Length: 212
Image (tube, rainbow, N blue to C red; front, side, top):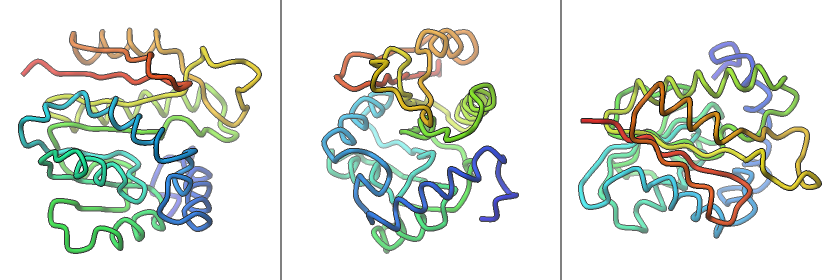
């Protein structure tokens, strides 16, 4: 994907994550997480938006090498999975790892190419690098609009929290206000919104369930 084909704010993010996957391969470090345990803990929170007893389709925003699909398979969820990422290197790795799996499709993109039951975004709002905070906030809200428009039953996402310990906060990361985003989602998307801020990480997850 050429850098001109997605919002300018994402060009350095593409390069950042491409470097990570080249350096660390298809591991949690390759998508800039500290380890598999915390990565799966995030997935457990995010997938609470879905009903695990029924088959569902899912759009994975910023899918990386497809680790969310691996988690869904491990949990024995029945899913049709659509993963997309701005990094061509990530998508190349995802296709290599999941070749010949018809339930998992991967594309280079920054927006979904079809509607699904649910949309999930894990970690895509964290690394802002040198983007000004107002620009990054605008990117987040625009992406939430895309998640809403492309999901039938609901969507979920996580963010680093502004309640993180000050001495551990890093200038290239974005620490969001969970109360603002809860209020924003509640007023704009659905009455059924859950804020999860109690699972031991310096972040929070929001679940937006639609009335259907």
